[in-house]
Image 1 (cartoon, rainbow, N blue to C red):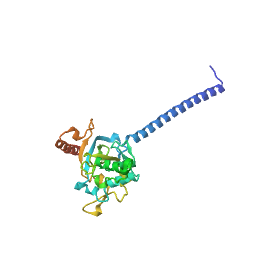
Image 2 (cartoon, helix red, strand yellow):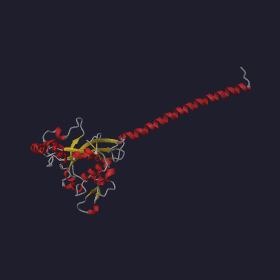
Image 3 (cartoon, rainbow, N blue to C red):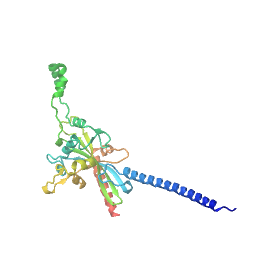
Image 4 (cartoon, helix red, strand yellow):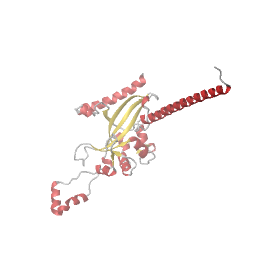
Length: 294
């Protein structure tokens, strides 16, 4: 079959046009796929990091991790630098909530926010008016007796009354950097069980705080956020640095487990629970030692 020159030229142009169109479609598909992959990787990278970490480590780099809860008594000698007069860490936390610098939460899950008014209510002491006092007020003031009680001054817990804390942290090994990190997640403040105003006789939680938020918004560049060096005033440190350097005393009360149980729940005997706390600390220390041994 013989085609004229014009027909041959038309066929060639048509083939080139179809080929170009196919290439454009293929390029568009490739571009869409690459864009989708890039966006997915970006979203994965953003969502995978722990939002509560001061120095987050990507999950793919974490070889080992345990969540530990520690109890801290600010009256202990080693913790006195955190509880110096007029610079108590609890005073900083209270002022931070009242002034809207940091948020307070119901517990260390950090899911339920506590308003400033509710926070202040938790710091209000119990009503010590007896039944007899109530009767006397009713006989004297009649139906206005409730208003009289409401107008009476009530005791409030001060910063130095709140000397029991809990710290929840992740202990993790970063295989990328070959380093073990103590990544503090939350700080919880309690009304002590042995406080004279605490008529319930049990430890009562006041509020929990995101340590990352506290460190970044409350500790940094704050002249009152001081770890007081008892030996040398020139060596006072910022509280964020003091926590990074582990300049505090505490003991383990819970290690992550399927039942989310405290050591006192697992070991009904208090002496056994204390021994279990020491054993848990020794186990973590031994694990860290073995990382460098092998």
